[in-house]
Image (cartoon, rainbow, N blue to C red; front, top):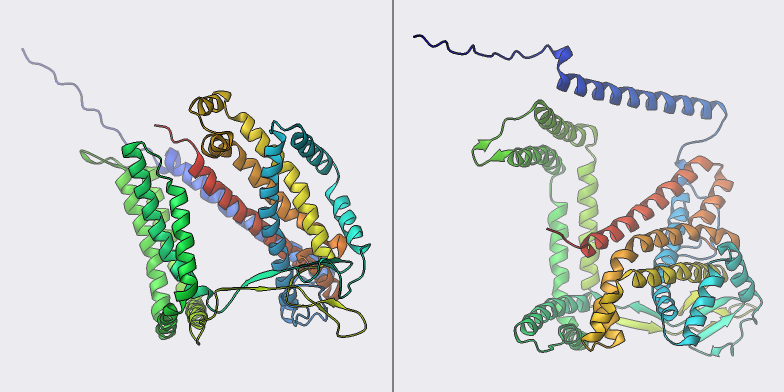
Length: 508
């Protein structure tokens, strides 16, 4: 009896216009091209309309002297518009960084005070938070500016601590700690001490885990760092030879041919795409070998390869000056580092300049030796710090209250003191809740510094307004504002997200 074999099934590939994968990619590519074309058309139309209205959009003012003087900053008489905006950026960054640090410390203290069992501390914290966060920030800045403006004039006997702390209608002046000639050599000693202290800390932790006895790893590592810092204060000149290494690196980098570096950059572009394709194929491998690739997989690899080739073409042909800029910048950086270590820099690592009163004309004023806060800087600084600290305090209080009460009871049952329980049990868990809203407050503080224009402090907004009043380049200046604040916001977000990822609970 003959057995009929089942008929063979032959799958035919559908035509391209009916292939789901092909249609999907074609539609996406067409949509991308249409979007880019629409953006290009709208940009051209906007440019034509602006030119027809005689609205300047070029950035040539960055290299032209705006003819302005700034009230404070690293350069009060900038010779170009770009330099003036850079001074404003530095002033804003100073305000933002210092404000974030001080507002965080003050907010943590006030937040813990609101949770204290001490009635007076709790009420003080409540009044601080409920008052400052409900008063508009601009009003607070104007209030602090008016308070400083109403103080006594600067005199040789101005206090409250003459020679150490001066407060007057010129602002505030206090001692300034700054790096000195031997700072960079001292940093090398500190880095060596940091490596040794980290090794000792890990050994102490292992010993504590093995024996169960308290070995104080953090305290031991901190004490070791203090000892190394004290010793390094006296022996740091021995690392002056590091400057020769940086000078040699500067000479080596400057001798690299530009064409060779340009080719290396192009090869890196192609190599990066090849590395990605290799990693992508590895994700598709099984114990039996390489799994069958889909059309989507092939398209992804094709796009990666095309992207690498286009990147190489861009850096090799369209932007040939990149290699020259990289060589010159890197060589200059190593030269600066060599200068920091060399030229007989053997003085103390840090130094302190006390504030003083000088009189070059009819009226006395703060000298350049101290850390001087102008009225504008002081008003904005205290305004954003106190205002943000009120919100940080509530975030800290809410984060601590979000930790289950059983954690506090468990710490108490182990005999931990309240301070130890906060440091070892409560705060580490509360940080997981606190970090995202803290990041938002840091972003708000950075953007709120733009209110400095109300009291005449030379931040980037005030400087930019002065520049476009002089040059008429409003749109270019506003675009620089947008790019600057976008960069600050993204940088803060990256830093906060980095710690947020490290603090999250890892699940199986």
